[in-house]
Length: 479
Image (cartoon, rainbow, N blue to C red; front, side, top):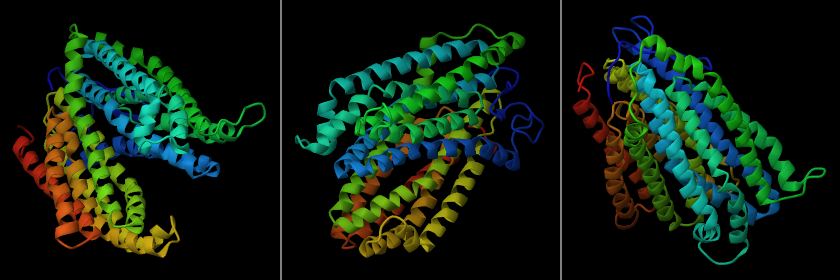
C-alpha cells in the first residue's frame, strides 16, 4: 500500500465513520490505543457480521419455501446455493480489493484517486460478470450435471431451471458486493448491512408468492425461488446505488478542499485492487475446497456422522462469521491508518485476534456444553445427535485456532500482505488433508480422526500466522 498525505479524511455515512479524532480515537495523531482499537473494530465489525448472517438467511429462506415441492427441489436449491458460495469467492477479488484500496486512498487524502478506483472496480465487475454469469448461463445444463453428478434425472432438470434465473442474476449479486466494498472503503459498514436486510425482507415476501403463485402470479416452483432472490437483491442494489450517488459530493468534494493532485490511471489502480483481491479470493475458494474434501472423507463413515458434520458446520457459521467480520474491520482500519502515514498494525492485529479468540472460545464452549440440545433442534435421530454432540467438542479447539488465524488477517490484507493468509491456508491444507486421511484410516480413530485433524491442521495455521505477524509487524507496529 502506498502512504502519503497529511491525515485521514472523514467520510461519514450510515452511522459509522473512520476519521480524525483525539489521541485515543481511531484517527488520533499518536495512533490507536488498545481500547480505541477494540471500539473501532466492534463499530465496524458488528454491522459486517449482521450483513454476513443475512447472506446465509437468503439460502435458508429459499430452502424453507421450496421444501413442500419435494426432496428434488430442496436438493436443487442446495446444489445451486453451493455454486453461488463458490462464485462469491470469485467476486471477492473486486469487493475486498476496492475496500482496501479506498481505505488507503482516503487515509492519505488522495481524493483525486477515487474516480480511477471506482472506474477500475467497475471494469473488473463487468469482466467477471460477463465471464461467470454469461458463460454459466450458456452452459447451465452442463453445470447442473456437474453439481448433481451427471445423469438426466429430476434434480438435474430442477437445478438447470434454477440456474437459468440465478446465473444471469449474478450480475446483481456481484454488483451489490462491489458497491458494499465501496461503502466499506469509505468507512461505512452499516449501509451494506441495511441493504442485506432490505434484500432479505423482499425475499421473504417474494419467495412464497413466486414459488406457489398468488392471485395473477403463476406458480413458478424452483424458478420462483431464484427469481424472488434476484428481485429482492435488485431492490437492495437500487437503494444502495441511490445512497452512493447522494454521497458523491461529500467524498469527491473533500478532494478539492484537500488540494488533491491528479490521481493515477485506472489500469494502475486495477493492479492495486487485484493485488489485494486475488489472494483474498484464492483464500476463500481454497477454504471451501478443504471443507468439501473433509465432507467427502466424513461421508465414508456413514450417514449419521455425515449428517452430524453437515449440521455442525452450519451451526458454527454463526461463530466463524464473527471472525471474518473482525478481519474486514481490521483491514479497513489498517489500510486507513497506513494511508495516513501511521503504523497501527500491531495494536489492530493483537486486538482483532484477541476479540476473535474470545468469541471463538466462548461460543465454542457453549456449543460443546449444549451439544445434544443444539443437535436436537435440527434432528430427532439419536445416532446423529450422539455424533453431533461429540463433534461439537472437537470443534471447540478448532474454533479457537481458526479465530487466531482469521481474526488478525485484516492487518495483512490492509497492510499490503494479502498473500500471507493465502499461503497459510495452502500450507494448512497440505497438513490437514493428509492428516485427516491418516488419523481416520491408518490411525484407527475413524471419523473422530477426521474431526481431530481440523483442530490440528488449523492449529498449524495459527502458528504460521503468529510467525508471520512477528516477522512483518514489529513491536512498534513497523515492518
